[in-house]
Length: 262
Image (cartoon, rainbow, N blue to C red; front, side):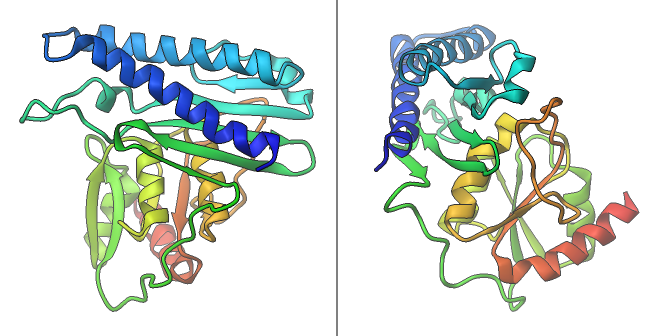
């Protein structure tokens, strides 16, 4: 691996250890959900900020958990990170008392003239990191061809209106799951066929997942098919589609139809 690609996985792994360690401090004891969410965001951000200052001192950083420095727009290299994607899931136990696993750590690198050059999505509670370096995952060979319901990853708490509209008109199976990174990586691993989001996101929500999905050979775009752009002055990036290229021609028509109806 190059120094940068090694950093993707090392940063994701290190932040994951911090977050798992925080849960370990609680053990089986009662806890305040909000305090745990806040502590997770804070500790992961502090660890990543310190590592990036030490290892990439000349680079800018855009993070969900830090003040945005407008100077990053003119930088040549920008790390786009989400120290804890899925704070809700991170701080929840299931009915059986077991901690949820559907949350992630996002690490991506943007370079001027090249856009996203790589990244990693760490899934610490699952012991898994998907990345863009050597040995990166490839999308499943068998993909959706219309002969069965299209499996769509959706939010377990607030599925977007565009997805509901698609489901009302077409043969789809909605698969609820946690954070944005988890949903995007479910397309990479073949657990679902597509991830369609129209409810609003920021660059840190999708940068690392998009980098990994692209390296796996998947289609990534805005819902209208236009290119996803990063390190913009306003980091709001409200919608996203990830799927196998062969499925995009059909899915894009469904999205356009659904968007017109909502």
